[in-house]
Image (cartoon, rainbow, N blue to C red):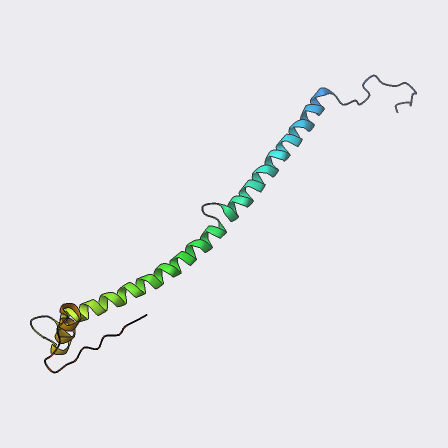
Length: 118
């Protein structure tokens, strides 16, 4: 059995420089981790591949889809006119309409009425 003494040992616990440097290192690493986490959270919302950019792309996709539908309808209408004016099947009504519209032709028994706009 070891007897108890009232002597104070010289190895009393004080914060040596090693422990102070470890605390500074822990604080520095914690700050760096916090900053990186904050950066990646912001980038996930506002970045090039973020959530807000995805919604912008979806809106752009909807607008381009509508534009594509309009262009397809115009293309079908032009193809229909081309088909109706081809040599194999000539639509006389369409030919007459185009001649009146483009060349300004009228029939012998027709009158021209001008609208005067003020």
